[in-house]
Image (tube, one colour):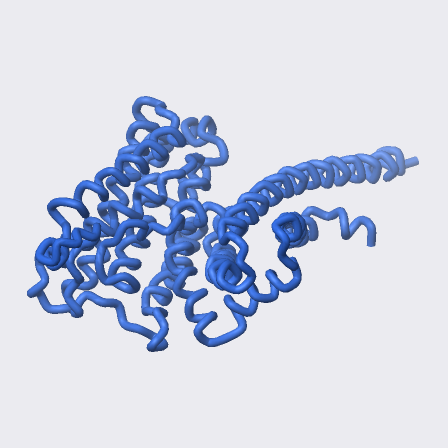
Length: 374
């Protein structure tokens, strides 16, 4: 039993759950320090996210952009590059999708909607590709470049929503609220459970999770991405173009984040708004890490963290505690999950050494064929 509890397989399953429980325990202490009842606060959080049809619909709606960003993170991290630019890629994807849909608003919906989503994904891919090319060609640290690209995208959004893309109705009314004109109804994603905000984008995200799994583990391209991420020197020795796959990983990650922005515009807000990214670019990293950087593991992880975002708003209204506490809990989960991954790797190495030692003992204790012959 003790050997099973120390086995890498058990630890790989149990430690992420323990990480969440420890993070919530620390969050409970913080709630108590804020003068709130931790048990009441967590009950409100869980019931608000999972205790009703509207809560579940809201959780699935929040899960959709989280999952799309997490899928891109799985690809980039497997490719050995760290994409912190999800926020900027979401913004650029949403801006491009909005501009395209408004420009060609007279096109039929069956054509305009898929093209709008594709344009959003392409814009995010270009934004991620900038950092990818800088990393591949000039060895620019991708963490710094993606963070700086976030800031550029934010300022670009501020400029466009207060100038060229400002809603003409806001100008006429003199209010000048920073938002675009409403998208044509032909480009709105179908609502799955009206009057909730749940839309068909969740089906797209789940389908893409399966496709990304097939890409990474069932195709030559996916094998090369993972090989470059695991050992660039070995990949280069095998003849793989390492710089290409480094850039390609960030391009794909940016494409998924850009698609998340396009889905938010066409499925939820139906116009470009300030704050549309909603922190999904960073929360998607948490979901991907909690899902063990596996596309299918990112599905329940995104559902969990989508529920936390929904429950946090309910907790803020009911218990009067800041919803930013969920951000703290997310950060704690990341810290403990990463620490648990280090422990699992050590357990794997220890199990490998023990297996090798046991094999040597068996070989030394077994008499050789020559010794057995008189």
